[in-house]
Length: 87
Image (tube, rainbow, N blue to C red; front, side):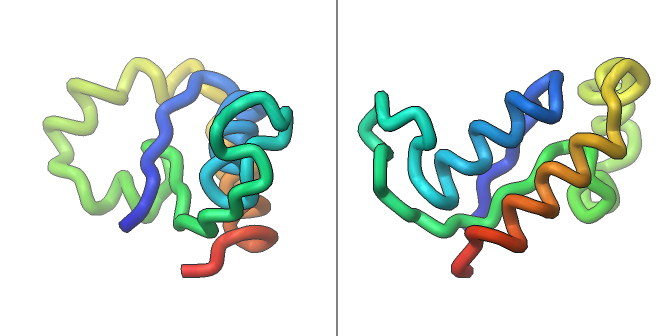
């Protein structure tokens, strides 16, 4: 099982990633303090992009990928996986 995100900013993706790996960092939701340790990826990461049909990816994600700071998103997701993923 993995969690696939599509947030438009690295910071927002990072917050969502931390929530499903290490628990809600704001301690406001039901996952406060709950460390699920799930693998989390963003749709623009190479591992995911390569596994999606090229035409479908371009149709559904292509425009978003052009305006995102893809390197920042990848860095944020990698950091969350390295720190908190258990599986």
